Length: 430
Image 1: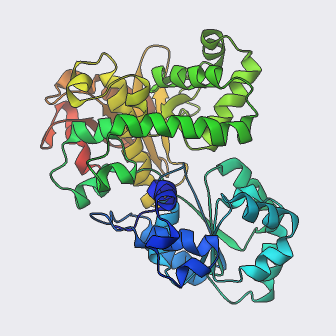
Image 2 (image 1 turned 180 degrees about the vertical axis):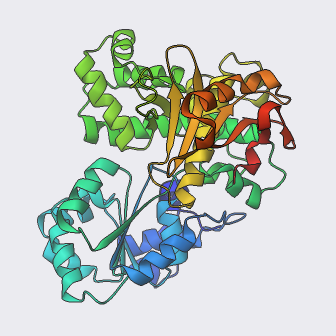
């Protein structure tokens, strides 16, 4: 596997000296050394990503491809593996970021297309010059491949300068099918606790607890300071942990603010920061005119169960089984799999939840008015009682509108439940 800069490249670059490189490499510039370090550090395997065919298709048909996602999800390594003939420059390097921002014309003259530009959000002024360069050879596709780990900042620049020129994709942590395809013997509980960051599965010797502690420290120092201008990182870390405690629950910003001791406006700003950097995801409720009593607040989910388990101090498979938060962790995991399934199918905005004052169905997928209902249950043997809310919602919205009802659980095999519903292992979600 080629080690990605976000996934594990930064530490690698620091460890590789010029002496370890070829004599020719020692005379070239830092960005190419960084690329050499990423490409030359081989570990046990490359874990194929489901998004790879789409990225290759986009590069054949669009002049710019933008890949967003949280830090260390493998954005850079994926681009470098798929497009080895592109040049590479990282704006994580302060000197490169400064020139890209202050002297974009000179920067692009030094780094002509085809080029991979890493962490491009650090140079917002570069985008207008990218537009001019792209338009000069509009028929040439795959000119610039851009990565960024601060989604909202990046998308603002893309929408202002590269509208109609860029295809945008998002790379999250590994899905359960991706893990199983690469490592079929992986236990489900281990995958939940270890999370989906590629490095942790490509190199099982890594201590996942130490990894996440370092990830949190790096995230707080780099992204939070630049995105949120947070004066007290300790308060922000407490806020992040409070979000972890509420994963798979309705979002209540007032409660979050009160628990951390911050103003509601601050809580709202910090939550946006977590969304922008891919750490949390908000799920909106599904409703129609026939279900006016449904709540309007979204549900809050951590994006990755490995980070969630770290925040909840769940450090092993045994600890997960004994944890009172196991149900919420499982629901968070199932949400990630459904989110990935819908993204692979190209169905943006199809995933919701259903809730009124007394009942809830964890997930609703709306396929043009036909609904698929899902309950996430932390059990190996669900009973007919686990499908009660599925039946209730089917009656409320109308039986003809419900295509299927499923209890997603830890059963090894699918089997029927009452009233046409099914119990399904998470590996069969598709």
